[in-house]
Structure formats: C-alpha cells, structure tokens
Amino acid sequence: MKKRVCIIYTGGTIGMVPSEQGYVPRKDYLASQMARMPEFSSPDMPEYDLVEFDPLLDSSNMSVREWNQIGAAIRERYFDYDGFVVLHGTDTMAYTASAISFMLEGLEKPVVLTGSQIPFCELRSDARDNLTTAVMIAAQGQVPEVCLYFSGRLLRGNRATKLSADELIAFDSPNYPALAKAGVRITLSPQNIRPRGTELRVHLFQPVQIAVLKVFPGIRFEVFENLVTSGVKGIVLEAFGAGNIPSEGNGLLELLDKAKQNGTIVVVCTQCLRGSAHIGAYEASAELKKGGAVCGYDMTVEAAVAKLYYLFSQEYEEAQIKAAMEKDLRGELSVPELI
Image (cartoon, rainbow, N blue to C red):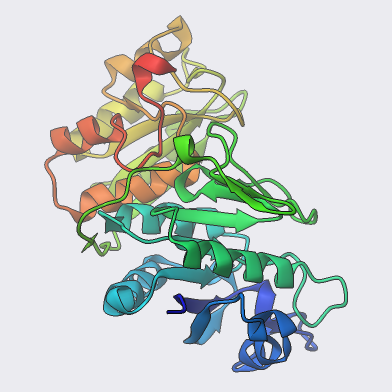
C-alpha cells in the first residue's frame, strides 16, 4: 500500500508569481505546478493531497491564528496520512516550526516544514528539490517530530534559525546536529531523533502578548519601562555572550522589579549564534538572576518565544512557567548539566 502525505500550503515564496507590487502568492498556482512535475508521477513517490489555505500569506504576516490553523489542520487529518509537509515562507518558518513543535505533543508522525528562496516560476528555483525531498521524508515516517527541511538538511524545527536572506542554504541549527542529510541518499541520524510519541495531543495557543528585547552597548532600560505592563506576559531578552547585561545606572533593576510586580516572565537568551546563556555565571548577569529572570540556555529566540506562547496558553501558574522554561520539553534546549 502506498504511503500518503498531506501537504499543507500556507503561502510563501515557493508558490509566488511576479506582480506589479513584487512577488505575491496566487491561488491554485502551486497545485498546477506540482501536477506538471514528473517527480510527482513517479511510482516511487507517495500519494499526496494538497490543502491550500485561504488566504495564502507572505510569512511575515503569520501569527498565532495561523499557527493554530496549521495545528488544527493536522489534528483533523492526523489518522488519514503517514506524514505531513507544511509549505511556508522562509522569513518566519523557524518561528512556526518552533510553535508547532510545542503545539503537537506526543507526535507519532513526521511534520516537515519547507519552502524555497526562489519561487517555482523561476528557472533556478530551489522549490522542486525542497518539496520532493520533504514529501519523501514525511512518507518514510522515521522522524516523528516537527522538523524543517532545506537545502539538503533536515533540522529539528525548534532548533532551526534563518541565517541568510539570499543564499539557498537559508537555515542552520547552531546548537543541535541535523536529523538527516539528503545527498545521493537520504541518510538519517537516529541518535539525534526524538522517540516516537504514543498519542497526539494538540494544544492550541492563546494570543498572549510576548516581547523581544535585544541588548546593545549603551542601552537604557528605563526607555523600555512602558513596555512592561500587566498585559505583557513574557519578555525574551537577547543578552551578550553567556547572558551578560550592562548593569550600572541603566534602569535594569527597575525594569526587573516592574516585571516581577506585573507577573511578566523575563527569559534570557544569548545573542550568540552558538553556545548557551548561563545567568549568574558572570557578575554582569548576577542582577538578572537576583531579579527573577529565567535562563533560556541554548534555545533560539524563536523557540523561546514559541515556548512562552505554549506555556501561557496552558494557563499554568507563574512558578510553573518559570520552571518549565528551563526544562527540555520538545528537544528545544540542552539539559543544563550537559551544556
């Protein structure tokens, strides 16, 4: 019996066409392109169904609503397919991959996000290889987690980040090895793949307010005090190095105190592409620890944001959320003792 894959098309460069305003997605265009591809009529390819969202979106317009739409679409069709491919724009693909990884608990089947840097309609498009390989990986069923396939590498979704706006190798997983590589053969790395779940549970997200603040030399935290209101549930703070912050006379203590009063959770990640935050390891991060901030360790900012959405949507208490942010839930961070 042939394997079956559900392809969920949300929009993005892969199915865009030129217009007077630049590239835009066009309804039914991708389906017509796939119908012409000899790869999809090959006996080695699985059967597939294409689910096209309406409207199709540039990924810069993706939000919690669309993440929930993707999760609900997978839940609705979960028992009808061997795997899922989500076609998505590259700009926010790592955010969506992270979000869906937290949304889908107990996953038993592959969910592979992919897209392209060059649209199908262009001669040198990378869309064909990304799409066909993602479908084959989804059909194999050997990677039961949310992942991102691009340019020959399969990455854990909540470990991926976009590196380049114009290179075909657009994504990397700086702190976790690839799950598979696609060359002449698709070669899996089983030791890097999470165990298969036993029962799918889908946790849709609430549209809580999350902010991201990047530290820079000379920052004055008092400028951002108005950002910390009771409506803002979480802040991801991109700190220097191992979680360091300039701490003298810049309003940090006042900001942390206001966050504590409002129940706003501050998560500290590193600006570095590789490595981990360790707040309290240096004097320059001691105030963060004293102020009740939690450590994001080697999580990407994308994963930290998605994890906050997930945890707040579960309506956990503040202490539960803080504890969970420093624990590995979906393979998104390295166990602190091993970093």
